[in-house]
Length: 401
Image 1 (cartoon, rainbow, N blue to C red):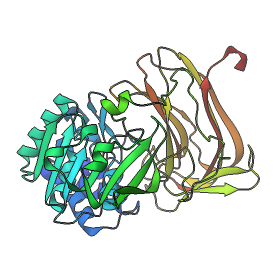
Image 2: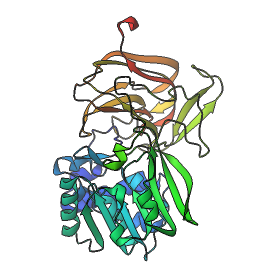
Image 3: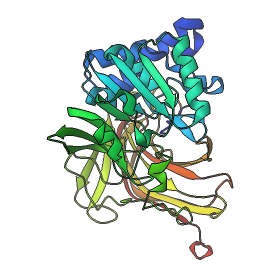
Image 4: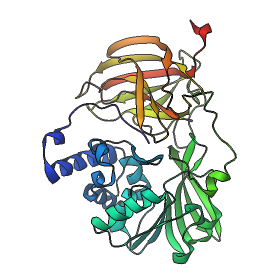
């Protein structure tokens, strides 16, 4: 459900009709998919060909080709293009594969898979979303995609076994029915974990058992239905806080900083830091190229009226990128229950060269409709180097004055 700082008019916005969308789509694939590390030529071509704007609500089409999650109603989002491409590449699709998708959502992921496999079977628990996705897929003539309304936790036994399973929502643990419906030697790609702290896993079935490999931190909407009913760990939206905001917990085996996700051009630095012995550094040489990281926060505007937001920031030769918003900041964005962004607050912007300084904003009003938030830090398309440490979100207290 990630979004990016952007209020500019990209080059494709001045075009019209199908040509406009084609230009936007190719720019998106180049900047958000290829430069982010996706290399599978078949996946890249499918991303270029799939008309993402057809799968988002009409009032959101201006955001269709940003590297961002887009709300599609009913508390759901269409995943960012990078994550769709990354998960598809990880799935190692073959033309003979029969794939089960859990969480049809908008239908976009199924559409990307369609030219890469033999058949896609996709399940959506939210009936209006499933019906809308089926209609769009039919209109666009995706003849090898089959959809139904139901609880994805239970899979689709009628068409099992499946060669591959892709799960586009996050359960706390892998549902056993999906394991049972996977072929021996088959693969599942699924985000597993808590509401705002998840890891994307690849699991391969070997001798009836699932052998797992952690891929990268991520953030997906939760799997609802039986999976949500069985969830043991739930967030506390009355006490918003960041995990590893001082970066002292270090990185995992994959080099990803713990607690944060969608890491782009970021390095964990060990040594003298404003708060402890670690901080993070973003470095970018290409104007407009992504360099940031994010984290989800549980927060309820009915319970938390005011927060404080702070970070320590330093910079080296920072130059604004191609657009006014291509500057380093720390940002917090509030979202409602439908995952529509309500308002944002930034710390910054930062340009030029500056030593470590703390930037704090107190008494930030939380919209009463808020049900979660996203914190982002980074260069956001600027060039140069920016460093962050001691990033904090907390309930505002009068004692802070």
